[in-house]
Image (cartoon, rainbow, N blue to C red; front, side, top):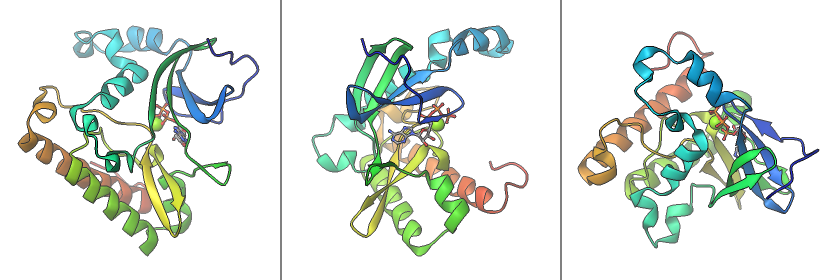
Amino acid sequence: MIDLNGVKPFAEGGNRRCFINPQNPNQCLKILHPGLLDKINKTRPWYKKARTLESFDDNLREKDGYEQRALKSKNPDIWKHLAKWYGLQETTLGIASVTELIVNNGQIAETLEHYLLNKGLTEKIKKSLQSLEYWMKEHLVLTKNLLPHNLVLKEDKDELVIKIVDGLGCHSFIPLPQNFNIFAKLYVNKRIKLMWQRINWDLSGRQGNWK
Ligand SMILES: Nc1ncnc2c1ncn2[C@@H]1O[C@H](COP(=O)(O)OP(=O)(O)OP(=O)(O)O)[C@@H](O)[C@H]1O
Ligand SMILES: [Mg+2]
């Protein structure tokens, strides 16, 4: 059991808080906000009642995402744009999803969102995005919508390598992309199109809806 008493999170999203593992500074521990599943259970609309409460647990969804078919590959390139996965572990604050902590010179890596809002769509970041696209199409890694705050930038020599830290998995209701490459290709192309829509929406000051 990992003791997180007195440990402050380094970041938080809408669903989870992120901590540096006190037992291993290269790992990130993500824990659901306290009471989140209870809150979802009480407030979800009738059409979401058919889903099990478990299906709203981002740590379990992340586990499914890392267990997808594409990531069974022995090709080390498959990890190029992913934080590595170390499973689920018990902590004093609940179950944590344990992944590689992405850092640059000891600092937590900045998100693509932060970069775009500060520097815009530079030639350097366009290259990083193209490399991510190429990799997704090559390996058919299934993700939910790729949002800039869920992508972080790892410095590698002169390059900024985009790492997906949240949103692995497939949100298609019928599991065709998980099982057939032809559907996986369509699915991945759609995610790339929506990623660009979201980036352009962020860059244009978030007017109207992004999709
Ligand atoms: N492995 C990591 N390495 C570095 N930073 C990370 C890592 N994982 C998460 N972060 C940072 O923590 C933030 C929140 O993490 P995460 O996106 O997993 O939380 P979430 O609550 O599931 O997010 P959402 O609001 O998108 O549902 C990220 O936006 C990112 O800035
Ligand atoms: Mg997130």
